[in-house]
Image (cartoon, rainbow, N blue to C red):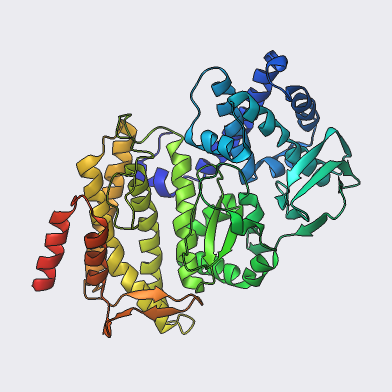
Length: 473
């Protein structure tokens, strides 16, 4: 049965299952491709023997391991490197992978990448209780997140793993096996494990991912509070998180906080700590919906192919970031901030009579209710001006545009205005009003300042003039 765009965007629980199923089928395809010509890929022989061993595992044990975000990353790289060995150009992630590991060809990168499959075999041996002896010890950079588990192998920068015996990895000297914190809220089980992001070519710095697990443990309670806040104010999203959220990596605030998702690591994202639980809940909703839209996009491309590179070409003003962004990124922002807007609307509506919601949290909610619809309108206008959508993409975009207009009407109904006080999050995670030159900063100040500094190509002069007229009135 065909579902409508609204249901596809917000209510389809199968979007996550389809991605996992596709990943498992891709693993079979990789094995068949290598089996047809094993001599052409160094390391293919040992990979195929491990693959055969994995294939005999209990299906529940295999699913537990293969639902790990890194499994999707691994099989995608394997598919792309195989294609590149046959003459296809390296993709952006694959080229970054080669640069990071020092591979000079697709064949060399594929050989190195096949070695990484050993981590899944090791994980499966631990989970299932089956012993495993590797033909050639697995040389690994530490810390290593053992896929599908809460285990992290730590110790010196490099180590070797010879196999698994009695559910214990056989490692070189000085290596420890630790457990990452796990947060459980109802049916949600979330690993706090920064080491899971230590994969080559991911596209952003991950030096913080080697920090001791103590940093993740320190903020476990706040993560639990944030998830419970989502369960209360946005229960539909929480039900999806129960289904698909696997790992959150917490990184310290080094003065340049950022939260980020990677399409190549579904079911996971990075958030900066410390943070207020409500602000953190908004960040979780934001990042989780990036994961959702990446999954929806596997049903079909949103943009027509062109020389302008809508996916990676950072060419256009976005009201959410200081740098120019690709149209693909702007479309993602419109989608995720619609979800965030609904969260803050629920907080302002239901939390105003609740002593458990502080005045600072309500003030932050009011700011978001005033700010996000203005940003949605600018983002939507940018897409109307510059994007060339496929039929599927146009359907998705028009649904989002209509919901953005509804958000703007809802914002006005709730009394939000451009003169609503702007809020910020301090380095300690507290919510505070923004003050500049001794005066409170407003939503209009944020929008106009951002346009002035970041709209370097003057794409949004009409929106700037409209803001100025509204303030004058």
